[in-house]
Length: 130
Image 1 (cartoon, rainbow, N blue to C red):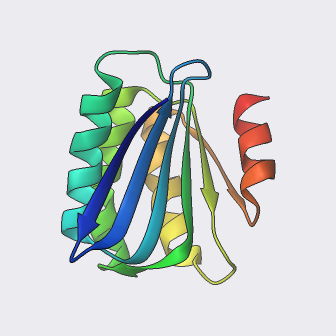
Image 2 (tube, rainbow, N blue to C red; image 1 turned 30 degrees about the vertical axis):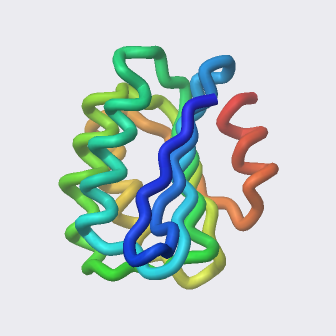
């Protein structure tokens, strides 16, 4: 497993994990995640993957809140989907984050990425790898 942690003021903002065996890349967000954090996460994900095959992406936002407008998610999300050629994306969150889920679903359409929301990371992982 390859890992990278993006920190800001000694607080983890985005923890990126890439599982070589399964081809699963995960973004676990904590605290207030800014647009800059998203852009760094996108760049670090590309560096971690380094041309390897990606099967799916998990975004766990249960312990975070966005420090950006939902529309600002479009550019970094598009870059990840285009560069990593992901086919499935699971968004794990508590209820009430429909604005961000709507953006993820909209951005995913042109790339033929299947997107599904979950409240549990175990179920999300099973769906991604199943």
